[in-house]
Amino acid sequence: MMVHQVSPLAPAELRNLPPIKGVKLSAAEAAIRYRERPDVMLALLEPQTTIAGAFTRSLTRSAPVEWCAAHVGATARAIIVNAGNANAFTGRAGVACVKAVAKGVAAASGCKPSEVFIASTGVIGEPLDPTLILRVVPQLMAAGRVRRGYLGIAAQRRPIEPRVVRALGLASAAGVEIASVEASGPAAAAGLRAGDVIVALGEEAVATVDDLHRLLASWPSGSPAALRVVRGERAFALDVVPGETL
Image (cartoon, rainbow, N blue to C red; front, side, top):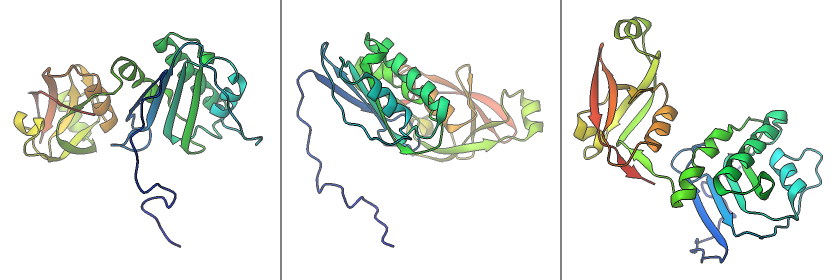
């Protein structure tokens, strides 16, 4: 069996998409399944835009397909697409996710949920957390992009021994261990080292890499971030000024 690193259906080159009158496009990384790649696209449409669609006749249509089929033919104000999770074969949880995304995008864009159309692609049979999508929508609405706080580290989740948790009064029995530090990055400038374990940012506990990403995404650009770090068996505070990346 031949394995392709790039799909054989991929075009030889990607051309720049020219502006489309009445459509505002933006995309962001929400880390739904993979990191460091855009996986949410938001298209904002002018008032009175109408939308049409063709749908599968399958009896096992996903919740996003059912939602779009129920509302197509009327006006549309937003289209939101995610990759990484198809929200298919997810039952009532999938329906609830679609309704939550439609409601959240509608609230942010000033339209009705029925004017929000949703498409999802990716793995099937796994519940899709709507907050992963909705947390990037406000910044896409405001700036057309999502800024990410950047520390310049490679990191992974690390359990912390119970005795260390008790001795240091930590809020969680896990943190984010730094595997490597970029020489010229914000973390290096602040004095962080490989082996350090980040357990809090500001007043929020950090138990996973997702926690750290979420908190950095909402941290004010250029503002010092107070980290709580465990090094060996001692804990200390350290200020770092995150850089910004898209």
